[in-house]
Image (cartoon, rainbow, N blue to C red; front, side, top):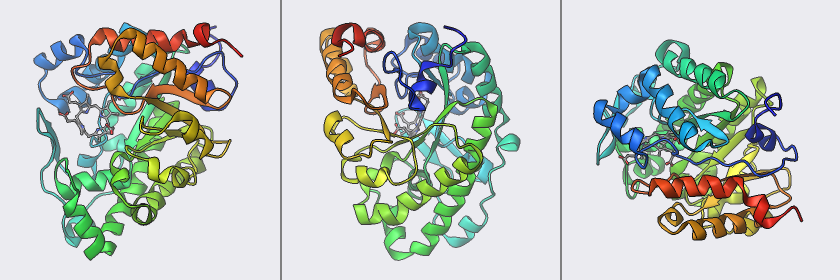
Length: 351
Ligand code: CP3
């Protein structure tokens, strides 16, 4: 067993596998008591994610507790920002806060290209340690935020409900926004290359807020920059499976399929079978159990996993939630999700 490559890596590459691999977005986090205890001792999010010992320890917490098939770096999509000259913090109950939101040309022109080995050596260190700790028992996942979603944070300055500030920029000063998006695309591609060189075996790009765009604006402000990141990474690392996630992606699924990614992470508002029917055969899927189901019973979780896996049968599939696990989820239900995911073939059979 131990000399075969991790199940998640084989599945993501499109090999035929014994069962769909399972992991969870945000699997390290507040629903786990060990995480909350560590957070009490280290209240700063920046410290937890930028001190390599802490980031490593947190990344390993769900692996130790539940043995998921994927171990994701504990970090944030905003972590590369200071390396480009944008300060941020993540404040309890308020969420991300940008020191000096980006609103004009001189600010965009002052941004530095990201040099990850200089500004975030901790990420390389943690990925290398994760890789040697988990061996072939799990795949190590790296991740980034996509240009549109990063721009939404740095322009708005915080989480937003209706994205009025960035939309004003998009519709009044599109060249300014394009300059910012292009800067992020180049830097994010450099960052992903660094993550892969450091040990990430599969990578995921979160364009969490691209679902806030109309399809025409998605084609203008999100897709070209997603594609630029994918193209740059594929030039140097063609064999690393690339996953793309958007929250609320039902209206742009076909478009996501044209960005060059290998796997599309579906949220739970799309039926798995219907989502697959809208994507070409060579594209795989991840997802898509409603994270809210983890407030239900273990039986309900199991039944929904069975349904999801049945519908994805015959296609490249990574079992996951449709978005991150929610704070307040009973930890036992997190465990039930992983256990039911690993035993799904015993219930639904090979046929
Ligand atoms: O999946 C994992 O376990 C890896 C860790 C991870 C975090 N953030 C840790 C984190 C990942 C992959 C992210 C990505 C991220 N960060 C996204 C894209 C994924 C998505 O959910 O769509 C986004 C939009 C962010 C920005 C961000 N960071 C938000 C909106 C928040 C929540 C604010 C809050 O207080 O609820 C964060 C903070 C954050 N990042 C937490 C975690 C575990 C929670 C705060 C904490 O633990 O103290």
